[in-house]
Length: 138
Image 1 (cartoon, rainbow, N blue to C red):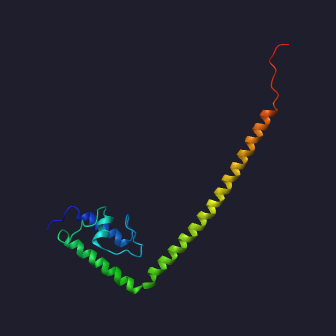
Image 2: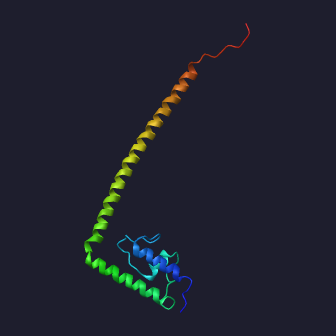
């Protein structure tokens, strides 16, 4: 049987998913699993593009990859939770850093507003105290 033109695209997407180097699908997500839908999405297509009647060999590879993922998950069950915990910690640290940076930016902005206000008042004061030159002839 000849290979269909999309089969190479889907096979490349499956290989990226297996390596964890996906471009579209988040393989680190706790809900990730190998399926025809995830492979199709990684290949840039919509779900339902990969059918067993069109790509039986590819579907078998996807099933094997999912079985391997489940086996690996059974061998290392805490690894999944550990990834979630470390991810939450990293995101929490990032949030704290961004909050501190935001506060610093607000403080700078308020200082600039204050300086701007003071300069405007100084300009008004200087304009009011300038003596008007007398250009009339005596």
